[in-house]
Length: 499
Ligand SMILES: Cc1cc2nc3c(=O)[nH]c(=O)nc-3n(C[C@H](O)[C@H](O)[C@H](O)COP(=O)(O)OP(=O)(O)OC[C@H]3O[C@@H](n4cnc5c(N)ncnc54)[C@H](O)[C@@H]3O)c2cc1C
Ligand code: SF4
Ligand code: SF4
Image (cartoon, rainbow, N blue to C red; front, top):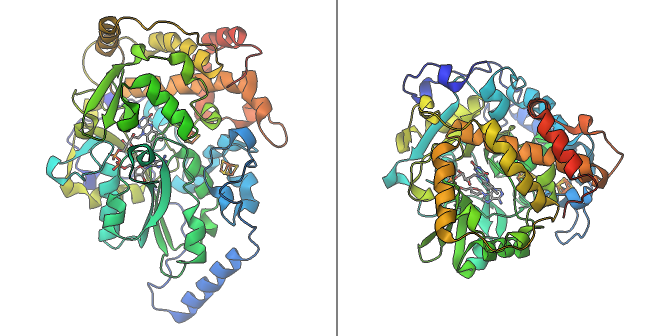
């Protein structure tokens, strides 16, 4: 099986990266560019017909959504397309098994499961998993890592490729509210710049589509959507009916999102000495949680040193325990950090990586080329021995499941020096770069397979489905690789309930 290490290691010049998935997905014709009045009128009519017959959006304070407890509050049900929730929702009906067909529709083919990189990272163009960072002098002030997502969005808007960017602003400026999401339709570079940084919480990203249709439909025909996997799946499921002439989709990896503000604050209290000033955090490749504070200070807490790990049960949204799209497979381009080998320092200065999935993704990367430091794909696979991830995954799976099922008991954390030492040892000996990322994907997939089989499958709304029917193909391959471990975990947690 081909891995990135076996691919040629020549320097990656973004514009020379050839698309591997030759066929682009069929797109509706671009309206208004040909100057043909009849075509314009027909397309406008088609758009208005599509909008007819839409249902009444659910109010934002809706208590129960169609996917019930597994709802990720993606915002789809708060739009007038809510009538199509059964086909769009990642947690209803066939759910994430639909990723396979949607990959075909969006990228022209499904991921190649024989290719280790595609199995884990989804459809990519040739050598499309690229280490990169925004050049220091070009970085936006407000950002999660080096501001790749924000810079790309600004570039698309400034170049006139899109009329608006759907991105996530903060609910308000106070430190606590800064971490709460407020998805918006940004029309200017200034508005996009204000959306930099992760708001680590479920976010109703599809909600602003309703505003687009109701208020701004005529001046926003080309849109860049930024979002995470469950949101993007809902968006792609109804792409043809969005009333847009052009849609770009830029996403981030996503896992284990806190369910709401209370849950986030509970987690921060367990991690940080001063949770009230935290404005960002990340589980980093050095096995520490880096918490960024409003005054620019950083805390680096070994994952073994959480103060109240038992209080973190119920922090992660239940939807995230049923999710198999860590890498956001239906974007044109996905950005993340976990495959970039640990370099030390702060996340805002640290290398990231992206997965270019198709020609639109390639266009986005090319547009930003001058502002980027692009590394070699081979650097994502560091040299030297490291513990195989198959040996590390079992030791992290059980604590993860204890957390999910509320079985963590109160205990004194080890002394700080020991927790630091443990983080250092795991970082030095554990999987790095692409292997670290694959280990994270394995861990989340295995945990979620157990959560679904033991409990969540029964909690799914609507007609019952077998596990087999809701799993995308890649999850089945990962499941087969860890058969014995899974059997052991299923036995251990039989009858438990996700909290
Ligand atoms: C909820 C979440 C979980 C993540 N988990 C991982 C992970 O486990 N592994 C990994 O490698 N990477 C993960 N990422 C991606 C990583 O944290 C960075 O977002 C990514 O590397 C981009 O950094 P940046 O500096 O380029 O982003 P920036 O330029 O700062 O832009 C961040 C963008 O994220 C969008 N955004 C912010 N909050 C949300 C939200 N709640 N929902 C949807 N969109 C949002 C904003 O619109 C903004 O455009 C996660 C991202 C999010 C949003
Ligand atoms: S996840 Fe989205 S589509 Fe599914 S029920 Fe919740 S809001 Fe609706
Ligand atoms: S982990 Fe999955 S379900 Fe949860 S917010 Fe992220 S993409 Fe959505």
